[in-house]
Image (cartoon, rainbow, N blue to C red; front, side, top):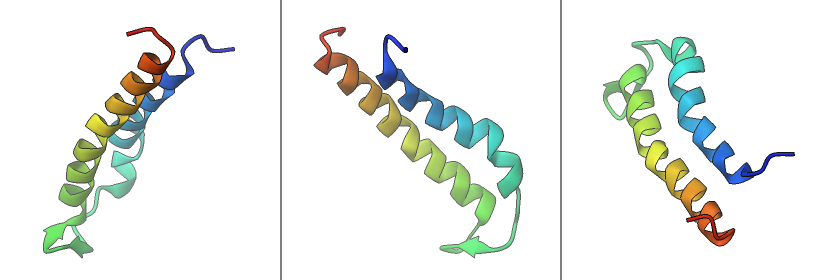
Length: 65
């Protein structure tokens, strides 16, 4: 069993940038006027602080921070 399961939230940016990025390497379609790849990187960049916050909040509830 994991000692700190809330740290699994930190896998989200890792998966978004390293594993899924080659799958979305496309210029078309465009989303909001930008190529899909730029939109994907922007979205993944916005989700990274959210994942870090959720991991921090989970550790804080367990009294680790």
